Length: 132
Image (cartoon, rainbow, N blue to C red; front, side, top):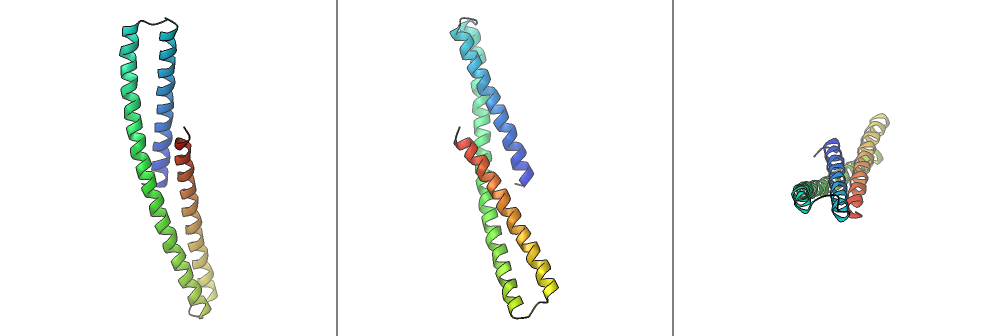
């Protein structure tokens, strides 16, 4: 699951689920105010309940994939940190020149920071649905 695919899917499902829940609340309100017959309410409510259920299942699947992505990012970060430690040892032992060391160190650090940033974004998104 790439960074953009989880984000776009997650935001889309959340928007659709929020909209469906608003429609359901509006439908309940219309029935409570006697502005809709019971049979019409039940028909529309059944359709909305099916849509909400479908969206919740999709959101659950996305959440599972997002948690898998967090696990992948944690492994990636550990691996990059290992590469960085190895590079530091090579540098201390004068086995790699300063320019190469700086270039590789910067690239590894950029990778670590990018991975941590994506992980924070996913965790923030998951926290959002946990609070709803």
